[in-house]
Length: 103
Image (cartoon, rainbow, N blue to C red):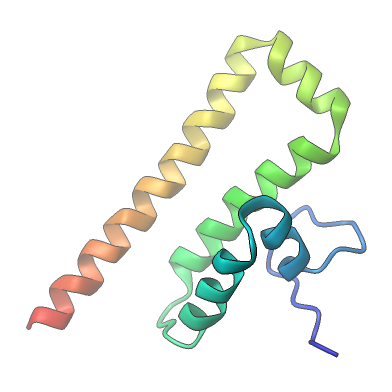
């Protein structure tokens, strides 16, 4: 049996991170994440990615929260901007890593 990794925040379900990633992004995405796990240096990008997945997971699992976000434009936009901010930071980390590889 595979170890049940718990890096996704807000995961108070019986689902492992693997199960959540597969449900949200598919088996290929989990295989990619597993491969990238071995290349981690600081883990900052991984933490931010798992935060994004945690936010998406919690909204999908909670119809009341989903309804609230649909009804409240400011909250929805704040969540979307927070997700985009994390993804931009991940892109920056990728850019820094590729610059270090060239040196």
